[in-house]
Length: 194
Image 1 (spheres, rainbow, N blue to C red):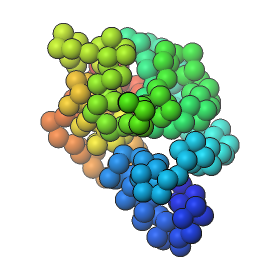
Image 2: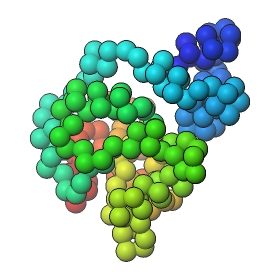
Image 3: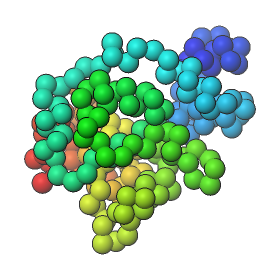
């Protein structure tokens, strides 16, 4: 993404990286800042920044597909990545058969505008689309994510939340009251969800 910003806006590498990070923090997705402030075509951005061999980057937890299949409820993917990339990742890690619905960034739109994570309005819209909106369903939908910003917004929208803490995390207890559980592995997810 830094390379795209660098080439598209004619910036030095450091400037491009700072701007990319600024837009990511401010809007939840670098793409939104580029659309708003630089009239970048979102489809060009997504195509250019996700054009690489996904398989080489994947690290798969042993037995992942089996563990996910045993989790209760339907599984839905909500990602700020483009659909082509998300499908490659799901197939690469063997989860393509277990994910009922995919909300890639192309589908994360409200009133014609992109609203990726951490948009509270988009989280609510996804809950409604999945028939999980309203007080009677509060907390029945669970978002598992590694971003505190996304989890905080999801909680505000009515999700229960699970923080995926990466290996070697400096702050495994990060997050506030909006975090219902923390896991380092999918293996722990079943126990935490019950």
